[in-house]
Length: 129
Image (cartoon, rainbow, N blue to C red; front, side):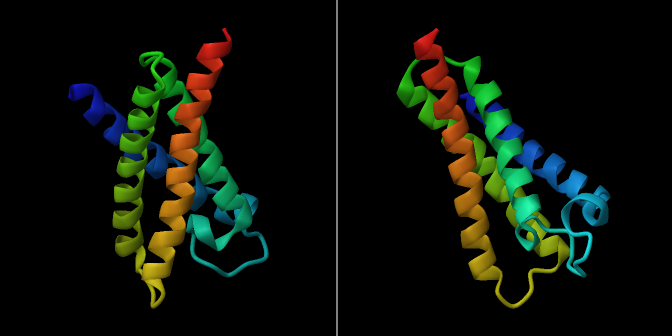
């Protein structure tokens, strides 16, 4: 059970790190012409960056797990759960806005897809080698 908590914390930390990079470099990398707040759904580049970060961290984390496909799915689910939890907290700390339910659903869809597909990618790579 302790390894599951590691996945939850790692997912949350990965989302928080991606968000920190976006806040730090928002104007230079993600929205040079926009006047939007630093949030991963406010820019296509930021959404792609967050998805890529979560995919890579989930894949690396799952690569050190067992070679079972089911275990990889469970790891990806726990990883994604941690990332969605931190995403929700960051959203409400920074000001959710009026369409926050839509933002939560769209953000969770991106986060879950990235986290689970990263862990499945690691499982598939282990099967080939």
